[in-house]
Length: 283
Length: 293
Image (cartoon, rainbow over all chains, first blue to last red; front, top):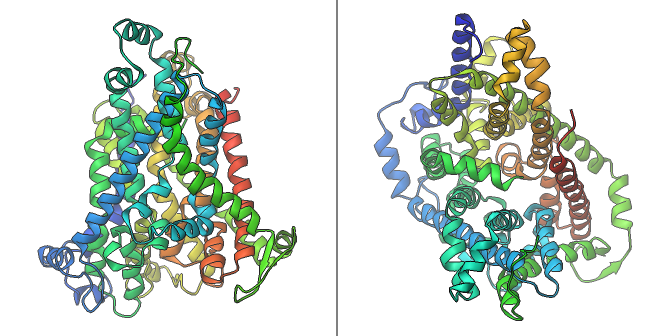
């Protein structure tokens, strides 16, 4: 603070609180909707304060099949699917990016730059622009309705490779020299020195990639037809469609709440890593 | 970019890059080249015969009124989302930068929408604006606005813009706040000693000094609005009413998977790829060098 301006201080806090209210309003309304019974959620105006049906809705959503009268997997199953998908994408991306960044920074071999550019190109091919042909490839490989099909096509990552490359480039050459004098082979150097040194970067990236994986929508929508493979994020759209006939907003909003709790929790609990990951990967 | 001290093994590096390269080839480069190839083909409705037609699909697209409208709509949508979310984030960051105590609490409470999936963001907003039940239409009726985004195209567009911008505020806020916190305090103090009031200091010092961030965020927000908002559109409007919210990504999906126009959808994919390449180029070229001021 440069100078003391009491009025401006009050305005500052007011604006920030207003901003937070604006950002939080949709979530508040979702939460309130998840705490009322179905009948109340059909009368306008909808309530703005929580009701007493939170646990009933939670039970029906989490253990039951969500919407009554529909053929969907129970929500716990969808949460588990999402968790598997998110973890496979996050760990997969980190593993293959660490390996390829290691190769590109620490080895001299033919086509090194060629491989680097090939990885770079993936940055320019988001799944949205190549959906049809990628879908065909996955179908030909027989990976529809599987966790492999959900995760592997999203695993190649230029941003993660770049980030690790950047991290490795800042590690002093003396590290490798001394490791060599001690007789370390390349893989030993990788496992015992490089990975421990990039620990926080790995954690930060993990936070970002977990959210990325959890929030995937278009891809799972295309390649899963089996209700047992539905992810929680996808299921919201199916419920919204069903809502046009018989809206059960309390259940839909409870599901939405359950779908956003894991990634939001990750952001808040690991805020420092999250901010680090966000600023590192996008530059 | 190669270490001065490095290994020279013949087979190990190939083994190390293999997983990434194999996945890239199978799921990125091959499908992308397929898209390019298919964009030169016309397939009949039953998939029985295909004909190689060079650029006919592209000519058709660029003469197609609906496609050009969708293009214009996407530009408008991106500009609106970027402007709305960036300006709100800038205001919030400018105030958050002033706060000494409780700054982390404010930051925590402002950044979490980043973690909400686009389709969920869409679901929340469509619920709040549900024409028969939603809270906002109920209050809007008192001021004489009849809200129904299922029938009114501009209201539908407004709704998807709000939902998309809401989700992106967190990201922009974080980057603006980081940029403002890295401005040396001495510059701001010098301004204050010269008698500039906070408002003036903001416009003549802070705003120009964060202009590289503004530029960076413009590119990022454009990419976000172009490609990551599929879920929002799909949940809120499904491109309707009467195509009024059909942005390019949605159209690729719709023409390919629903309309089964493979050649046309592939041609649209190729145009989108060119757009991503241009945006990536701008991002790397200018953002790396930073904007001059």
